[in-house]
Image (tube, rainbow, N blue to C red; front, side, top):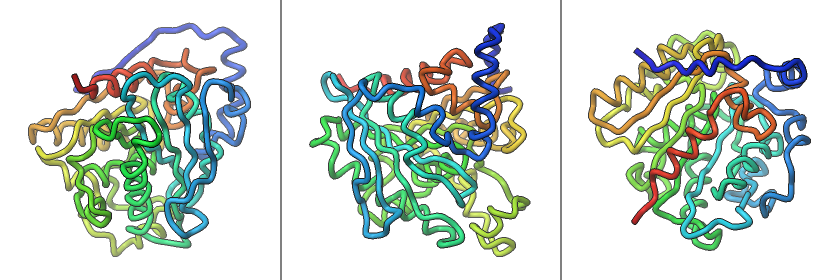
Length: 296
């Protein structure tokens, strides 16, 4: 059975109104600038549009803590959007939330379908991860504490890099170099593909079973934190989040998972943002997982 967190919060009307305002743009897996407008720019140092490859989509934004302390962790974040849409600029709220808590954060773009198909977006994410390893020191982060994190399709990307060694091997890395990975509302087991956009991205019906993260669960997997909404009607949380957690646990890999009541596919990510932390303790659980990777 999955653990289900039921905060039992009675939301004031103004909070419900804010959530309703944000729900429409977030429904497309994009913050559309609304959450970004509500979070400060004074809580971190940053650089935008840093290239990790030659393609215009192969760029990332950097969020550095003002006071990172000694050897802070680094997170590479991949956003969702059915592998067909998304812009790193719409996820400043993720970078701000983590950097404000002493986590160096990279928010990476990657090439999208129909410009590319599987596995090219994974190859881009691997290149962004390689950039993180190459530059962690100059960003003040601990290279031993690099994590991948993603939401929705971005969680799939993070899962594949962490579980299927082929992609990081292409850039001279291995999943065991990761301190861990975090998936929010990720699709980890979704064959047959029914979503028309995902069908294009994965060349359905010629989609092999090894495109699924669940197929690569093993005892060699790095530490995993899998979070989802109990009432997610976009990605089945029992099949994907609970299913992958059970498969990893059975293989002997370290994994935590939780389903949150009162959230949906998009608000589980929105809860990371400072203005919406009251929705559920998603950010504290992420920070606790990152903190547990600290070295003595």
